[in-house]
Image: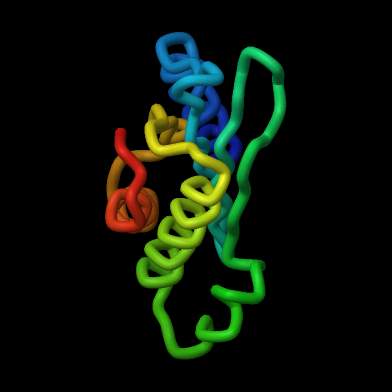
Length: 121
């Protein structure tokens, strides 16, 4: 029962954030999803409903070093990889959607990695 309450509360926070944050073609939305083992990030153009760029801990570039890293370091690497892919597509500015999670821990590390990679938000 407790787990379900946690999921429901996160979904409520997520809806609250999404009511205020929306991505456009000029400034797409950087969305974060965090599971127990992995972290996923996407850059989405909400006007078209398309995912422009995606990265996760399942990508080969991150997974090759995952054995020696902790989860925060993996998240930072995912952020840098996402920023690199976004810059290759010509995207520099995004809006950050934390997906109902606290801006802390892995979510914060992913955001810092994206900023270090060259994204602005």
